[in-house]
Amino acid sequence: MKAPGMAAGRAGAALLLAFILTAALAGVIAPHDPWERMDPYARPGGDHWLGTNDLGQDILSELIHGARVSLLVGFGSALLATGIGVLIGLLAGYFRGTLDEFLMGVTDVVLMIPRIPLIIILAAFLRPGFWLIALVIGCLWWTSTARVVRSRTLQVREMEFVRGARCLGFSHAHILASDVLPQILPVVLPKFMLTIASAMISEASLSFLGLGDPSMKSWGMMLNVAFTRGGFINEMWWWFLPPGLCITLAAGAVVLLGFSLEKEPAPDIEIGE
Amino acid sequence: MSCLHIENLTVRFETRSGPVTAVDDVSLDHEPGECLALVGETGCGKSVLALALLRLLPAGARVQGRVRFEGRDLLALSEREMTSVRGREIALVPQNPSLSLNPVYSIGHQIGELYRMHRNMGRRPARDRSAEQLGRMGIQDPRRRLRQYPFQFSEGMNQRALIAAAFALSPRLIIADEPTRGLDETLRDEVVRELALAREAQGTRLILITHDLTAARALGDRIAVMYAGRLVEIAPTEDFFRNPRHPYSRGLIAALPENGFQPIPGPTPSLIKPPGGCRFYPRCSMKRDICALEEPPLRRKQERWIRCIREN
Image 1 (cartoon, chains in turn cyan, red):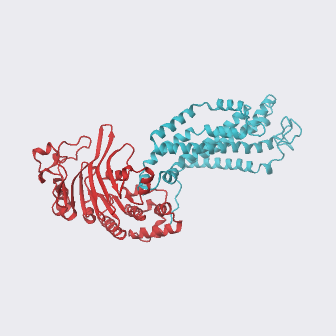
Image 2 (cartoon, chains in turn brown, green; image 1 turned 180 degrees about the vertical axis):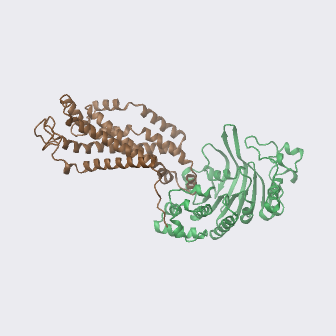
Image 3 (cartoon, rainbow over the protein chains, first blue to last red; image 1 turned 45 degrees about the vertical axis):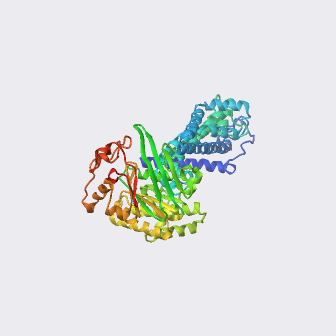
């Protein structure tokens, strides 16, 4: 079990690292400014490895800069979603009772909201923007994290060292932060990874539907442009295939890493000898 | 003078098969400076009593009565006030030492945490104090040991680490719940000796909860015997061992290895439907007919209290 899981995890980590480096160094790596207009509809080759789009913008440069937007939305909204999920799950599982019922009720309600339609409605009324999308995804994607964290917290709160800490006069807040939270992290990390993947795909879907931020070149937005301006019809594969591949690879990398974190045994404890 | 008075403490749990009265109308005074040993069989309500004092029972427990400690009723305090009582004024050494320590933190972190959180000490002074405290518990080379984790400690060492943690903030009262459970004889004697030494050094008062009569005899000034949620006898230690008065106390002492291991016949009664009349009646070797009908009150006889019809 361990060996293939680890290998997949390493591959995922390497791939993700490559994407992160690309995003961070986009300005250095990209051969052109993604907004710069040159010859439109150029085929791949020479100066433009992946050709140009209808406005004559270099597709490779767009792709490299797009990594930045897609990863930012993914990480940003996953961070927000995981934060909300951990907080709600911890409080519900630790204190139980009425608070638990209330918070889990809220979770069920949020779980039932159809997410993509809600975002479409929001986008129709508000100006679609990069941060708005990240915020909305973050505020909707926390439900399963909250449930997983709650069930783990229910186990941890019954462990004897929690009572041990209370016998010695530590407050609930202190016990939550220093005794319960570290026990929760092993289930939170893989969940965080899956949320990143899910958020990236959602951002791509929304942008493809034309609900993204037109001033930001994300991979989903590139697909949208390729679709609406003839890339698909004219079979210009170099226009629509690379962003699609990038979305798949980036989401896949994150998921592989998440799965391997899930399987990994407890980290080695440094033994002070 | 600082005192602990327990007045008519009753703890009830609702279960599927009916309410369980784990502690039934217990009144007990803890005199200043003394060590009280609370003894009884497993399941007689000793630990529940301790947890009730510190309000650490699960939310489903219904606690009635009063627990006066230094002029306050502990059962009426808010959770915030109670948190500042625990550890600083009353510390509880929980059962199962190896499970009661957090496996992911070093022993030093867990003892030092008390000084850092409650006394606002820095990392270094907290470590010094922890080492001192652990050394006092008879652990060799405490500085090196502080860097180790509970899984690297034996059960006896974890027990001592917990006792060190309980003594850390010099609370006025320490309740030790089965501190000698699961230890062999040598370790038990050591833990008992260290508890006695620490108690002397810091002038802390102690409530020892145990089913180990040898430890109770070594540490306790008075012995309180619980049976099926009720107190049945309270007596000064020497009197208790020389001349136990309640038939259950006699049974306990007759069951000691040095007295020939004679078991008390019959099973412990269910706390859901305790026997009517005297709770010990079904197992008592000196029962009379009236014992099945009415339960005698806890009566005072000079320095001791006994709940038995024969004492009339």
